[in-house]
Image 1 (cartoon, rainbow, N blue to C red):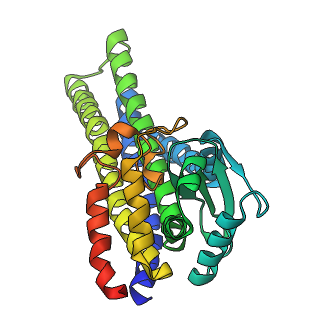
Image 2: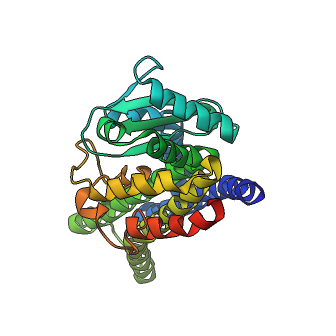
Length: 308
């Protein structure tokens, strides 16, 4: 358990660092805009950080509810699916976690995800297609994977990553549009040659940053997501003591040809496999949200010896 406790602590620390990084980046964007428009860089920083804080608060407070609603998930009870409920309850007890809310997505595609801020507010969701196609051993492996995201605080980290990337993309677009329209309209009057040169430098710096920052943020988000999928697989095996169940489930997911109807690029990193069919079959790359299923199965098969 020591390694997994370290992982949990690492995720908590990284969540704090992510929020700090987002605030700093918003401050830089705000300073550039403030200085470019009126020379008051401090006001630009304050406004940008306040906007970031508001966006963060809304996402933190209501993000999981919005994710569940947009996916079409419906909360269920023990009576709706006794086997699913019992499996989730078993994993909760094995991991020393509170029982999460359980949701069902009426879709033939095979997938599942977990969301929430922490184990106390966690929810797990599974599609009808996956539930119907898995036996109990396989279902246990999938739910252990999702509950591992809960136990490892990946759900919080994933939410913050999504907020950070979304914020950076939004602000970068505002920066580019602001500078473009101000230049197009000729609204800026330079009081001196040096002042005009300074504003031109700021404009170029802001535009370059607005292009590079979203790309870097997205690459970081995807790289982190891939590593956490590997770790959740390993953590699931630690919870169930049975790699065979998750291996068999991942093989069935590999053969699935249905695409989740209510999926989107903003949510694709949350699922056990990428819900977009064209990306689910892809290989490992900088822009992959998940490791290739073949790579995950190969690693899990390497753990079979320890539990055989």
